[in-house]
Image (cartoon, rainbow, N blue to C red; front, side, top):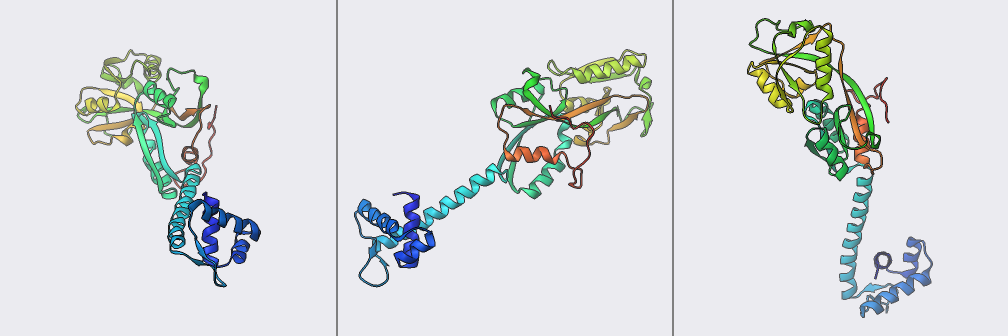
Length: 311
């Protein structure tokens, strides 16, 4: 007994006549009658009382009708759910992000959930190597990270959508009185002050950018601590241990009055940000639509991008 036969049976029970049931099912009467007889033979019971003008269900037939309607409803719901998952309308979207890019996610997730409330998120945090491994293993579908993406795999395997660049700013302890409370400073003003650097064994490009900019302004940075954790560096700044030069968006994830954010007036270096996924891996509809959400501005309109390159 299969789903098609159950549909035939329920339609016949509803109509009370094989002729009307066949018409509602858009099939001929003889095939329908044959399928009903095959069901009775397989079950070894009579499903219909055929003595009157209308077919009446036997007790066994009535019980089968109840269960068949339940099964068919569950099947319809399952089909709907599978299609919705395929269309990105429900399910779990697993993504990765470096800590310094977290500030890019809350508004996107809020807007995405407003459109697709049945989609939930699972977010993994780590450096490029860890997130690259998670991507390879299929634990996450996409990554929001600083560029270039310095994972261990062949860079040709990645597809990258570049997002607007993020300017570097100076993060100064609130207790340092030699710096203004707001506004901008010159890069050279950082010379001679203890500095903290965001650097790990696997992600060096941002650190190299910072050092190169210091050298361009004629001084060797006095780096007293290198750390792979944004949260740790910000804690050290808040305690007055040192200053740092980091992408502006970092402070949106860790707001605190104990750290001042100052623009660097004479510096012209930026942190590139992008969404990374694997070219040769299936991407769910939810992931595709989440990527598309980054093409929109804060009002949900498609934003113009001069550098939205997908490689």
